[in-house]
Length: 378
Image (cartoon, rainbow, N blue to C red; front, side, top):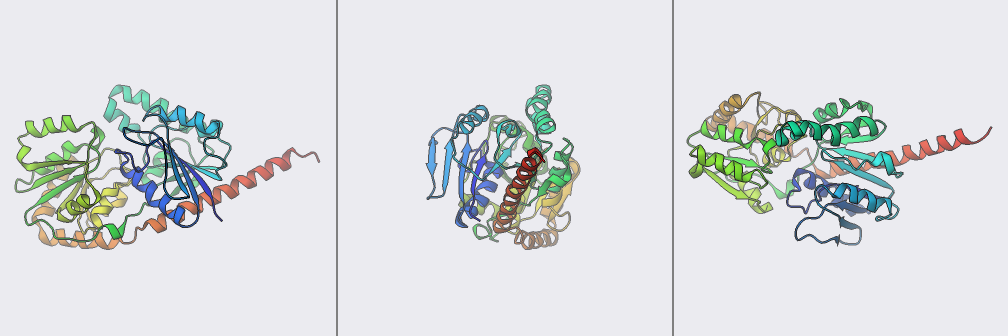
């Protein structure tokens, strides 16, 4: 059946800080529309963005407020009927909820990429504990216990379940990769390491710098931007690494592909990841990853098959050095990574999510019928 799907998210895929969330949304939404569905999106605005944007006949984006104000403003706008008659709502929770159980009567599924509790602490210190409790923990525990959830790794499913959500109500759907947009290329003639992602404190790019220092013959490319960049640049200068680190800022898809193909090793040391899309994009280019074994990275990286996982920053530095200096290991990991990446398609991910949305519509109808029957006098 053809659906009208409303997506409520803090950032859409056009946002400069859209990251993996934006990529995941667009990878699926583009296919839902191609398959005859209609999609409306409510997200925050950003400098230069249009308040309303239409992509073809069946995809529209409404942009309201900023990163913080989007939540109350989107709730009020949709409560007043901004998007008319959606069949189902996909609520994206990135550390802050839209409180849908309080006001939404349309069937809904809650998408969580990862729990942000540690992220809040990493970014804000002690204040972050309180912010995480108020904005994420309390709403999930108190309001969302009867909600249907979707997430991108079993590790995140366990984190969601910690909030009192039954695992039976949490579906796991691994995200895809645009295979046609990547592919193996020529690796650089001398060792090149790559960090690809937003520059946020919780991404712990400083640990990636530790790995670089362990491999004096390598240079590091940093592709991405964010509010942690000035502090990171100071750290690079203080360590005397300015000549060995190339800061690219935000890169185009073509530039990203070239960097992934040239890299000998893709690195990530984040304190919280639901999956890490960059790992699979690197794999689609035949480039192995070395990562701290956090959250969904234990699932996106198959240790000693598609990359290496580390328990500590010191171990990550040692394993980076191992992959750089052992050509046989590097080639085996890259070959296996490429083979595995081909299993993760956006078509599969989009169909699985669409099936979950359709199932929730059916279950909501059953609940409504049962409730009406219970209220009918005998």
